[in-house]
Amino acid sequence: MDIKQLRDKAMHLPLKPGVYIMKNTRNEIIYIGKAKALKNRVSQYFGSDKNHPEKVRRMVENVDHFDYIICGSEFEALVLECSLIKQHKPKYNILLKDDKGYSYIRISKPPWRKISFEMQKSGDGADYLGPYMSAWYAKNAVDEALKIFRLPSCGKTFPRDIGKSRPCLNYYIKQCSAPCSGKISQKDYDECVDAAVMFLKSGDSDSIRQMTERMNEAAENLEFELAARLRDRISAVKKITEKQNVVAANVKEQDAISVMTEGEEACFAVIRFSQGRLYDKEDFLIRNIGADPDLPSMRSEFIQQYYSMRDNIPPVIALDGEAEDEQLLSQWLSEKKGRSVRLTHPQKGENMRIIEMSRENAAERLAQSHGHLGHELTALDELAKLLGLPKAPRFIESYDISHHAGSDNVAGMVVFKDGRPYKKSYRRFEIKGFVGQDDYGSMNEVIRRRFKEYFKNPDSGIGFGQLPDLILLDGGKGQVSAVRPVLEEFGLDIPLFGMVKDNHHRTRAITDEGHEIAINSKRRAFTLVSGIQDEVHRFAITYHRQKHSKRSFATSLTEIEGIGPTRAKALMTTFKTIGRIKEAEVEELLQVKGMTLPAAEAVYHYYRKDKNTDEE
Image (cartoon, rainbow, N blue to C red; front, side):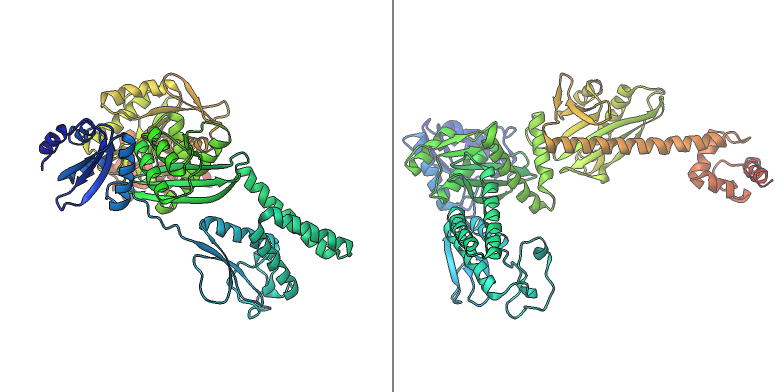
């Protein structure tokens, strides 16, 4: 069917709750959704596509026909939608790969047993602890045990490799007892392994109690060396425990879910707490989400998919933003769990800190997939929230004016892509519209010239051919007011702000035409904006100094008889420096465009005269 036929069919649907099933020409299910009123929801797909996210437009282009199932309520539609998505795995629904499996902690056979994390058991005669549902928890437990009890984490085999090498760095930072170089006896090593296994089996509180009893007993028996080792282990376990408790001291049982986007990819991160401790962390990469994703809809789909795969549902699920149909989701989750489940949006305090931790994990995972750093994404996300932008700005352009008392007026444009300088797109401007000092007029001219160039070859790529997601001007609301009319004239809806400095020339705030936005409290955003402001200032002032220096040289040349501004400029263009002009012969000077023999001889004798005078 074509779009008109699909819309006609949708307009004949009932105004009842239900599930709709989109199919392609091969009769494959490509999308499943629910609706409170089928007619209203489905007809939206086949009307104007101006308000559709890119992913929805792609899906609609592939729809050949659709089916629907009427349900008794919107809640029944949600339950059926979850079931059908899980069964058919449609291409345009968010689909999570559930690679959650059991994991184990392996203790190899004696002598010189080693503790390691394994994804599965094998019939090798080793002892195994587990299974553990959370691979993250098991891996971290092994790492903690190895550090606390100073056991090796390397790939060396003992006793084969004993005495064959010097201790590595872990020995010197007191995270390994260095059996490789014979620094510990087998008896003491076995005692360390036994203590680590006890810690892994019984947890920190029981482990501390048992080690405390042994420490007191050793002290009474005057075994002070053993007592001191046990004291250090107890201290190490307590430090680990305190570090974990600091993460969420008052959060008993809760999940925190966040999403970060970059380009057409997203990453959801889930961190899970139980009994006041973080016990699991998961992340999921979602591809092909489109350039302008509907985040509330994505959060709703993710929650449905994730908790369809998990039996353990906490009473509280904290989200980093709104989700579509939250009341229905809460009802569905409560029914699955058998008790009330709440969806919350923390704005402050410890729960907000947990959400930020979740966002950092999502940003780090997403950044790894793109080959850069997570803190760059979190800084952009923090800046977007601070400025009220709909999404993190991928391309940021910044401008600064530089001059000397109104002379040699120039401007610099720098571009930051994904939080990093993108020097391919840097551009320099020489102010041409007027002479004298007028920062507002200069900024207006530069922005006008920049976007005139864009419309000559729109969306052609780097530099002028790329529209920015955000413009930051070096200056206050005056600069913003000078530039705003230019953007309106070109019909461009690009967020525009000024970067305000304090008396020490350091970034203090961001401003629009109405008010200032303090950024000091937002560490990552502050660091990013300060870096942009420093970079655009450096770039503009470097160009200004180059231009001023050339003009100064050109001015000295015009003191020579027969050399005016045009010939002076031609000489500087050809020879680049005054030093090379001084060393040039008459024949070389004559090669410069516009030079005559009298003029060339005048230049030659002018600098030779200076040289002869110096020699005398």
